[in-house]
Every structure is written in C-alpha cells, then in structure tokens.
Amino acid sequence: MENLVSLGIRSIFIDNMIFAYFLGMCSYLAVSKTVKTSMGLGLAVIFVLTLTVPINYLVYTYFLKEGALTWLSADLAGLDLTFIQLMVFIAVIASFVQLTEMAVEKISPALYASLGIFLPLIAVNCSILGGALFMVQRNFSTLAEATVYGFSSGIGWLLAVVLFAAIRERLKYSNVPKPLKGLGLAFIIVGLMSFAFQTFLGIAL
Amino acid sequence: MKGLRSFLDRIKPTFQEGGNLSMLHSTFDAIETLLFVPGHSAPAKGAHIRDGIDLKRTMITVIVAMMPVLIWGLFNVGYQHYLSLGVNEGFATMNNMLFGLSKSLPIIAVSYGAGLGCEFLFAQFRKHPVNEGFLVTGMLIPLCMPPDVPLWMVALATIFAVIIGKEAFGGTGMNPLNPALLARAFIFFAYPGSMTGENVWIADKPDGYSGATSLSNLSAAESVPVDGNWLNVSGWSVGDMFLGFEPGSLGETSVLMCLIGGVILFATGVGNWKIMVATFVGGLGGGLILNGLVAMGIGADNAFMAVPAYYHLLMGGFAFGAIYMATDPVSAAQTERGKWIYGIMIGLVCIVIRVFNGAYPEGMMLAILIMNVSAPLIDYYQVQSNIKRRLARAK
View 1 (cartoon, rainbow over the protein chains, first blue to last red):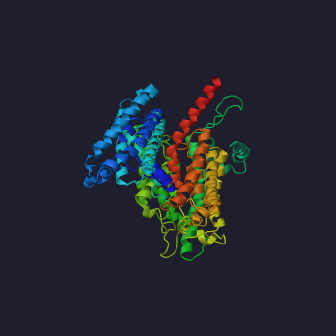
View 2 (cartoon, rainbow over the protein chains, first blue to last red; view 1 turned 90 degrees about the horizontal axis):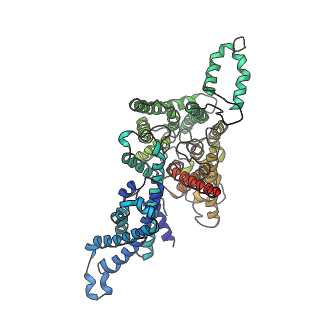
View 3 (tube, rainbow over the protein chains, first blue to last red; view 1 turned 60 degrees about the horizontal axis):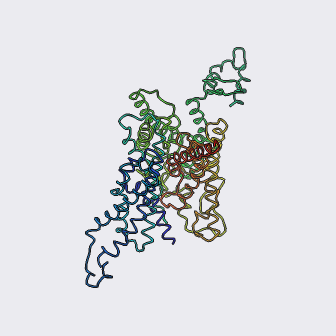
C-alpha cells in the first residue's frame, strides 16, 4: 500500500510527464489557451491512461513478454513477441481514444467542439504511449502498480496543463515582444515551470 | 501614511525661511518629495483617489523596508568573517561594516548594472519608458546571494532573470515568476557549488572552519537529542537565529530585521499582510503536523521532523522569503482568499521540501517559485467560484 502511494506521488510530481520527460507536448501547447478546455483534455488523458496502461500491462504480461504464453502451452515458452509491442499498444490506445471521443461527443458537445482535432489525436499523444512503454521499462510487478501509475501520470499531466493554461490566460493582455508571441513565449513558460518543478526532484519517498 | 503626513506638516515651519533649521530646507524638501509626490488627495468620503501612490513610490517604500535587512547583512558578513578568523570584532569597531561593504557593494553594483543595462536596452528597442520595477529586484538579488558568490554569476543570473523572466513577458508587472528568485534559482541549479554546501555562507573563511547553516546541520543530523537540547544539533541558539548572528545569505539571517521591514511594508500598505501571515501560519502548521507525526512514532529518528515547529520560521530564509519575496504583488495570487491559500501553501511546501528533499535543505526559494506558478490557477478558481456564487444570488 505504502509502495503504491509513493508510486502515485512520484508519478504526479517527480516523474511528471511534462516537466520531467516533456512528453505529450503538442496537445499540451495547443489546447492550453483556456483553463476550461485544458481541463477537459486533461480529464480525457487521465481516463485513457488509467485504462490503457493496465490493459497494456495485461497484454504484455500474458501475451507479449518472453515466455508469457506458457499458460497456453508449454511449447510456447521460448516465444518472444515483444517486437510487436508497439503496434499492439497503439491499437489498444486508439480503440480507447475512440471510446472517449464518442463519450465526450455524447456528454459534452461544447467541449467536443473546443477540443477539435486534439481529442482523436490523443491516440498519438506521446504521453499515453509513453505511459505504456514506461510500464514495460520499469518492470511493474502487479496490475495495481500499473493502474496507479497510469492514473497518477494522468493527474500529473492534467496538473501541468491547467497550471500552464491559467498562466497563459493571465498573459493574454500583456505586451509581449512580437517575435515571442504565441508559441515562443509558451516554450519559455514551460521551461520556467519545469524550473519550479525541479523542487520535487530528489524527494525520497 | 497619514501619521507621517501630519508629522511632516508639523515640522515643516522649522525648515522654512525664518525657522531654526532653514539651512536644511532642501533636504526636507527632498524627503517630502520622495514620500508624497505625486500628492493628489481627495475628500474622505465618496469614491475618490485618496493617494496618488505610483510605481516609483511603491518601489522606494520597498527599498526603505529592505534597509534594516541590508544594514544587518553588511554587519553580519563582516562579523562572521572575523569570527571565522577567531576574532570577535563586536559592535565597537567599524571593521565588520567595512568588510561587509567590501564584499557586498560589488554584488549590489553588478546586480544593478547588469539589470538596469538590460532594462534600458529593452526600453530603447521596444520604445516604452524605463520602469522603476527593477529598483527592488536589483536589491533583492544581492540580498539572497551568499557573500562569496562570484560576480560574473550574479551578472549572468540577473541578465537571465530580467530578459527571460520579465522582459520576454512584456516587462514590469507581467512576469509570472519573481525575477529575484529566478536569478537565485538560476545559480542554484546551474552552479550549485556556489550556492549550496558549507563553504559559501561565510566570506573568505579559513579552511576547516565550519560554515554550515542551522538547516544543513539539521539535515545532516543523525539522531534526535534525547534531552531535548537542540542547540547541539542546529548549532545556533534560538536567540542567535532570531537576531541573525549566523552565517547565511546577505539578507536572510536576521528574522528581527525582516520583521521590522515587514512592519514597514504593512504600515504603508505596500506589502500584503495576508500573504505574510498566511506564510508563517503555513510554515508553523507544517512543522506542527510533522511534530505530531513524530509524537505518533512516525519518523521519530528524523531530527528535521522532530525539531520544534517554530525553528522552521527562524532558520534560513523563511522570514525573508515570506516578507519580501512572497508578497511580490505581481507574481502572487491576486484574489483575497487566493492570497491566504497561496501563503499557506508556500509555508507547507517549504517545510515539505526542507524535510523530505535531502538535496535542498533550504526550501523557501523553491516553495515560492512553485506557488508563483500555481497562483494564476488559484485565482482562476477563486474568480469562478465568485461568479457562481453571485449567479446563484441573482436567481
């Protein structure tokens, strides 16, 4: 239990998808113009990450990993399917993004319109695929760990995007030098924010 | 402010022609101008502008509020230096002051030179007037530097803070992060050797003399004193830490001087008292929670968790940060309730970083930076909840 709590806090603050790995930057920069839409996309990312990481964990452990198929028959003990893991992960992610998209369109058409192309594009959001690949790399040993990891990585992404959107909303009326308007300044803000998030680097849990 | 005005009015005749001190007329005039020009005022009732306080007067008030801290810093840099050589110069001689000046004046000059240089360049190219905003930043930067910091680092950090931290966002009043803290954080992460450890807090100290601060002593402590005698662990008594007889950054050592500055900021209304109080409350609360955990048996061998909560407010830059850095009206939360949340979170986060992050025994700088980043979001939800409440009332 303690282990899970520490993993959760780690993935929100210390191994933050944005400030530590700079993953998922395209939608991060594009959808962060207002707090409202960024909140919507953040929730979608949490939903997709929370579901896809554990599902991919099961797929990886029982189908793809070397020797994973021994439960089927002993002859398959030597089989190593990890070379198709990228394709399988993407397929799982894409189908869940489709599901989210349909749900959002049904529940909140306004949000659906404001997210636009970036909702289906979660499918190729690096932080989602990154979640699945980190899950493999870090050798999570239980399904609970993978679930907690997916969920709290999503929260970390949401936190990063709403903080960023609030700053950008406040800067709407400031007299920014012309060459820096828009994305240029956005990159500087992300840099300064990850400066502040260095705070959590090295906290022992 | 009103009291000051009537005091000046009362003594004004003394300085005018025929008065006892008429030769000091221009001095009086200068002080009056400094404090009260532009001086439009309005009747006490109704919606009028009561006081023509502008950016210049705000900034000068903050500078005045920083004077006690600066003067103590100058003294203490020399005092600690001579103490490390085995001489206690005390208050009687000027040597402490002179040595302090020789160490600190270059830092102040470089900070103002580099920063104002950037400001003027930007003002020239972007065709806006030069703002007074840097007056305060340029003084805060030396105050949060260790006395031995290399000057080129100060220059580099100042330029970084002014250009990336402020001018890129459109100049004074637009920066999301406090520029002075950004300058300090820049050196802290880029050249940690000049900003952390035992060797930077006393100027020109001989090798072998320990220059550890109470924070690093506590962070390194391996056990909790059984008899409750914290002096051996922290290395400095409560009195010394309160008055400021300890090594540290130029301006952070004396809590007493910070409080005097805080009173000036509070009395003139320039610094927000809610943020100051909330920060101290947050720090004390965080310390008490940790003490409570220790009493329950969690982390009982961690000296940093077991130390009495008020120690946290006296050690390191807590008071300095709470009074001068957190209250920066630009980077702090703007809504009234948001200010309480902002301040309390600074205190709490600071304690969390100090205690749980072994790499950074001083948490104040990073706590304020992280809350600077969060302040717009706090404001956003505060405003949204106000809107919701008023809509509900209108129905």
